[in-house]
Length: 405
Image (cartoon, rainbow, N blue to C red):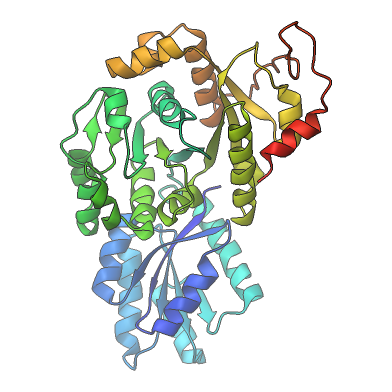
């Protein structure tokens, strides 16, 4: 089930921080907007259709606050309203409920009480047809550069069935546009500059159409423009896009900067791209440790081996044991064909749809889209082949300790 999305309204900075702390750092809730006045709240609710809005009752004019609750519900029936206050008088609780608030939250927040509120919100959200609309967000990440994450992301977007958007979040060196052979008029920078008025028509005008099924939102054209893109912008944009596309493929830069982490937080699945060499193993091990510290479920992290060769030196089972993860895909190595498609500006899955690379990427696309539960067969290899064809007797654990962070 997708996470519950929240917008909060409070004029009190301490209360805003308290609500933010309660709504972040767990897998169930996502804070997508913080408002300071009623007009901003109403505009954001209409634009982003959150699961719930928490309205802090903190003025003497309770009738005005009760009227705001009614306006929010009228503007977005699928959005639950939670009224919150430090002084929880019976009259205040009853008035907020009569206005349409689904829950009342006493401040300061008590963890167990808040958990109960969230459980009821989740139950309501699951029965709301509009609230349940949520495109699948798939992040493609590599722990080091040169692993082929952009190639995989571009081809995965081309292979995915359904309306798809490829978002290039490699902010200072994004190449997704050249991989698709398009010349975008607008970039992510333009979307951020117009974030307060994003709607279906504006989003459609700012993205670059590649086909009737695939669109691109490219990285900024100039490296310095990356400074204008903040984590909260990415959170809001991904939420809006997920309501308009069945799949959002996010090509991520290979660092754990705040923007990348914001996207990883929202991803339903993370494809972690691994190359079978010591730097690749080391960086993948390091990335998995960071994911653990970020409290990501291992169920949403999937390792894909790129540039795989059956004549490779490292035994897959040993690497899987070392990383503590099974691999879900093995994209074959064919440097000439891959570079050919990149230079042509056409995804390989389109240029050579029947190749082994294309077949495997299509299978991975079906797997992460939820339309297939098949895992590819485990390729067989020896650990380290000598030039004479004999296995090196060196213990694999000695080799793989080189991959430790």
